Length: 77
Image (cartoon, rainbow, N blue to C red):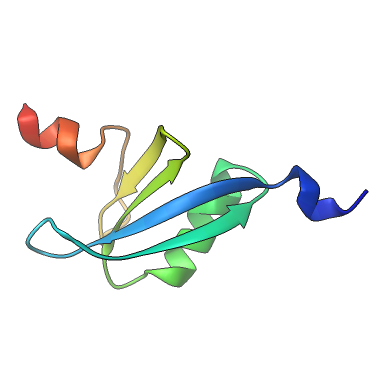
């Protein structure tokens, strides 16, 4: 069995200063922490939001502060 068969599919959204998605990336990672590391590599100049399927993982500000509330939920509050 190949090692990558145990990886999960993630989606990264790079969020601009106006709160809109600037770009997105689909990628594979072994777990949420590995996904966070990969996301920071792919999109270090923006805030990032990471999803695994329909499950929100985290949103990380440019300063590295993480939030467990998706942007669309946070903006409704």
